Length: 342
Picture (cartoon, rainbow, N blue to C red):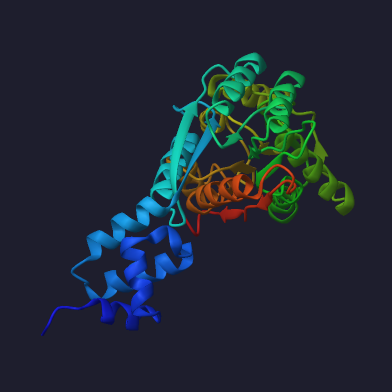
């Protein structure tokens, strides 16, 4: 059989021969969707000039620099998200994505604000996980005023301008957690709540939704005041032990922030009722093991690949749309796991 020709590529792609020639020799003059169509056709039929088409298409793509600020790299969730972001950046088809990824150990507002300002000076769009604080808001406002779009990740943030958001609907997430307690606790009692920090708006909204659902149901639960873990496993363990010691009628624990591994260690070490309910966030080795051995009843998680894909595509949209286009907002679906589907 003869090897495929430009004519065969054109027939497979449903375009003219001249269009295929322009993709090879002057890709800038062809729309991006058409370039991708021709490239896909060449790959499918094994066109001998595939390398030339790939090179031309790559050179014609727009290059967009994205800066993303995540929390500590030693935390499994953020490490997995960072790896997924790199993969999605490599696979993005309509532009060449250069991603500048930063894991921040010092979560103080001043340090986060400095990093936002620094990255915003060299990137086309910035995505950030941060607590709500005036210093951080000022840094974001300055970037927005300079025309650099900013996307809040996981927890919404405020600023003087249109700041986007990519993450869960935290109100619904909190209500879903409460639904789990309502439908799985055999005897209503006290529910302990752990959160990382009151300045994380997603955690505050989670708690509001959680209390709202149980208040509406009037099911007899008493939701205790939340205890802060400051995203620390050691503090989460200490707070969980305190709850178990001070409240023998505790029927469950809602872990709405960081430190789940510490909470798990405390729950395994201390006696508790068989029907004790624990709802936590994210699915990784430790929480999967907790689901399997019954320490955790349910996890509410981010589908990491979907989340990473939406972060990249939405940040690109925000950059291309320009500062006057309004904020981009994307709600990520909540992945629910129990012992039966891990």
